[in-house]
Length: 398
Image (cartoon, rainbow, N blue to C red; front, side, top):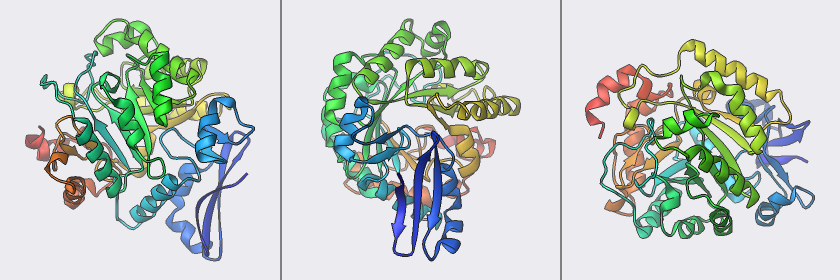
């Protein structure tokens, strides 16, 4: 079955699952001209694994998604189903970005600073002031983000599972406008909680795994027993019928364990395995040399190629490779809101451009300031790993 990514009377782009991967094709009278404009976007979808096709005959674990979206393709846990009203909004944002008019498609909201872990690489700085957004402040932030163009609202922290009223916040996100997602360490993701989150309308949950080995994972998290919490949380979320993404911060300490990471993801049965490269920010802000070398980047690239050839494994989202091709998403597709309400270009760039508590147009105003800053126009690699950016903007790091 073909699923429309974009269509109008003179141009359309379709995606079709075939032999466990996707195929993308353009058609219409203006196809020879317009497909050049969106060729990079088309390549992102082409010849890639996908999560699931939704239909009456699909796996029963996807029944609630089928009830909500009907016949559709879930390409990624990061993205609304194809087709859906939220996906159409995302495509419009991507088309606008192709001509330089960017929107904050993904907005992460740290609803609380509270967390039972002490992760060495946490992007949240050590403020220890127990900040959190109130439910009304969070809902206002959601409204502002969606008006600015967001199609993926991600609740994180701290640890969002410790926030009273989390389900109410998830339910507040209109699924016709955006998907509601969540980042968690897995602490508190019990069977009952997973069912409750699913009932509230949570689209997907990302559970962080720093190492496939319990001792190494718990060391990075600063607390013993967190690995077992993460594994149990993944299992509980899958049992509840949630889309589950295993999220790995790729770093020198785990780049040689990639095969074991993949085996763990495959054994657990997660739908997607996502990698982002470690960033010197937050508690890790001074570790500018403890990042991946060019040799380690090559190891990761070869690993991705091997895993993509395995039809039985989860879909991979390869953050470092995506950034290499499309550039850093900070201030171009991504925006972050802190527990204090500060509006940042992403969770890793600690420079506030506004605060959601200052008024109903704070997010849009902050986005205009970010887009006016030349630093976020070039589409280079991660800005916080860029020595020139750190030298120029370092005094603004909050």
